[in-house]
Image (cartoon, rainbow, N blue to C red; front, side):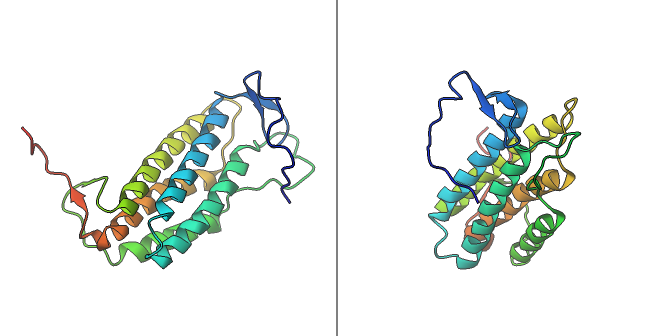
Length: 192
């Protein structure tokens, strides 16, 4: 059970932060950047949800995803080490990826095939979901860079999850745009 009695600790005043497993890292460390960007993504989804009350099924799915993103943040904030910790670290698991794929397929099944790229916009919900999508893509880039850094491990399921998340958010934005009817399509060279 998480328990937060005091919000400020003053331990980060030197530009470092503690990982769940204890070691301190600089606040610009790639691992901290990755889970910080996951937090940004989660916040953007929270804003999108202010506009999805009339889309109950989508809103419920976004609520599940927000919880998953805390799991992902905990996963990233607890690096794998040679000596296992005394507790079972929280990790993203394959079933979370599978559920996200099923959600993508369910929402996408009612959408018309695209004939052009979609510009971020349309309804307020869609615009915010597109913003969350771009944040998820940034988080993915950071996670891949972290995974390719010497001595760093990022779980395969975590990488898959963040990749599927941006796909889900794209499909969710189209769904929020009246099933794609309110999508704003890119017209190449329109303003030449």
